[in-house]
Image 1 (cartoon, rainbow, N blue to C red):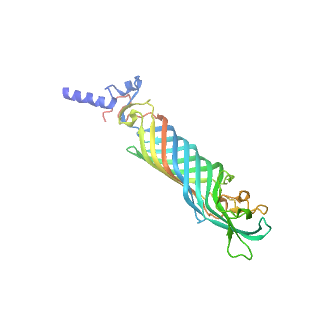
Image 2 (image 1 turned 45 degrees about the vertical axis):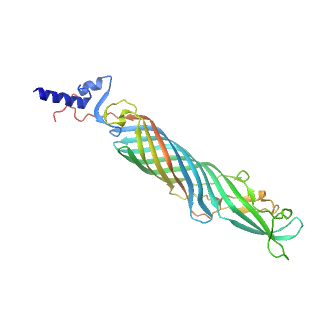
Length: 330
């Protein structure tokens, strides 16, 4: 009898934390849940902030431009997550900054002009070492579904991305040569005739308007690990009113599923009649506005931190307790 009494006392301690009954536990100031749980048991509601940094570029279907050298994207999102056991749903609202550079293939343009001496010549402009830059700001709304396995997590889902601001800049070198009737071969590097070599044009000199990018839907995959900053991160008996704070560290990839190419169709270069030798007066348009790049898709790949600073867990139910808070014999 003494042995059975001791075993019963140990069992109650295992269930309730200090041997008291469940009803008294709920009334006590310690507010113990009385269940052996961790942060993935039950229903949780989490609110937090997410920051990410990623490599970014545009994928397209032409040899006119390259995905290199690319650029970067920075994101900030207010997140809400609903957890039910090892599975979760997550959404939020965020903003992203994108700065991308793309190399553009060398181009030549020919026209007739009259030089400073009044002599007719046949001009050839060579535009080379060109890089087009675009800076964009997007408003984003993600919708994710995911799951946990011993602290590791994976989540997938779509993200709406709406461009709200942007601008473009270009850098390139321009060379002009000429052919004169009666002379053999091209003539170049004659500043007094308006013929110059490798004249640089900087991004500050060639600032343009924003690309009219379209609404995008990104497909997102994220893998990582979650750290808990409370004893909910360790299996055991926990206070039901304890704050639930977590930090996720993950790697992610996002690719645009819609064609976001601008509807514009502009020439890459336009030489004015009044200034055939003044490169600063030429019109230069971003390569994505040329209508020659086919479909365009955003691409991001990088690291992401998510800090859930507020968490609420729905009340857990003691499945072993009877109607009056006592342990059921079954």
